[in-house]
Image (cartoon, rainbow, N blue to C red; front, side, top):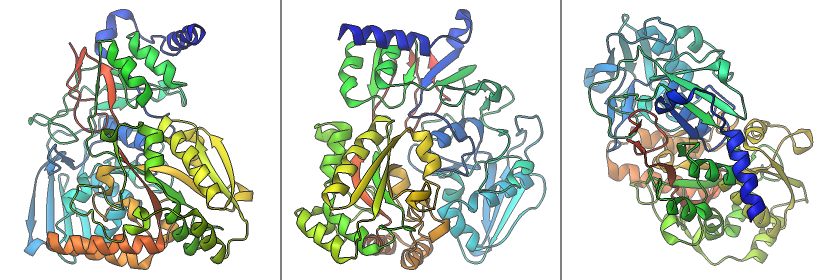
Length: 525
């Protein structure tokens, strides 16, 4: 133990070596993100680290408040006319891009179009749009084919990919390729000259950003008032190093401390540990539907009988039942769309012999099943360990390939067979807000253009469209139950449960907002 403690402290001291003068420390926040920032464009990926980065650099037309309602953010206001078919959005005066140019309506129109090509509800919105144009420098107009009451939600949702506004010169680019510059109108500027992938990302306060007057109570609505001149994201090599650096005061904020280190952090009396996002995190096992064996929906259905959600959740969050829930279906438990529709596929007694027999009956021919197994962050490794054992117990020929999360992000986009660098299965996550409704990207089942795994289900898409058009909550709940039943047939993913992840930060940092890491409002006292 003594040797490890010395090593950890030394590694922390080396990793967290200050890059600024000591006198400037009060205006600098040092943060340990959940994983390395490898992709900067928040439109081309669903990775949460890219989303969190995106909200620092880019702003959105609408924001979500702490009551999960949409409020104007970049907008001065909006109006709805023509029986709900015409929306006019008016930009606030004085908005500037980080390069000093004015934010114009045509920039936002181009940004909306680019984002919608990658997003689930964005594509549904554009399918209902007859016309989207910039009427003048500050006015955006949507003319819809029929009323679309979810437009503010679509443009302001915090789920990935976010509808980030960027200059038209960047937005008028291929939505399947990252933009070449990080120029937004958000409260922070990205420092590309200090970005070291795998080590550090740096942001400085945008001094020409004018926040809204309303006080932000959490999430992305209200005034984004920045108190730190500089925020440094420092990627840690391991959890022990992160804990040591936080204890020694070398770091200010750790996004995802592991459950086994929480008692140690709490004992210091100097570190606050708190769950800031009560929506939870859902675990998902995605399967490549383009290649054997999981191009066979009967094999995917058979695996539903092998899932023991408690095994996944205790591996991530320990035995404390307050930290996780099992018996979780497609939608976030406790929300309007969650139901018990067809849940016997997950809640009935587990019978591995029956699962193995069903897989053989489905025509499994011992094809190699490659499980991508990220070794960080800790929850991905825990899920991967349990998933590998589960797939093997189901009778599959499994090869577990360990790698860092950045490599897995790139690898998961490979649609080729496993012998050509492809993959079969990968554990991932969705924030509880991202799984509250069927409109979002995580349930898009449009084949090659869907989320990785590329499930093709015309029936789910038909139901998703009907859900968006439904005029009352009762109808939406009925449709959501039908979607869940269809998911047990087409199996876009295997649900693995939900857990509630605390964050940890120095008690000298005040104003940490509810939700994912947001860096406005926070200040050192």
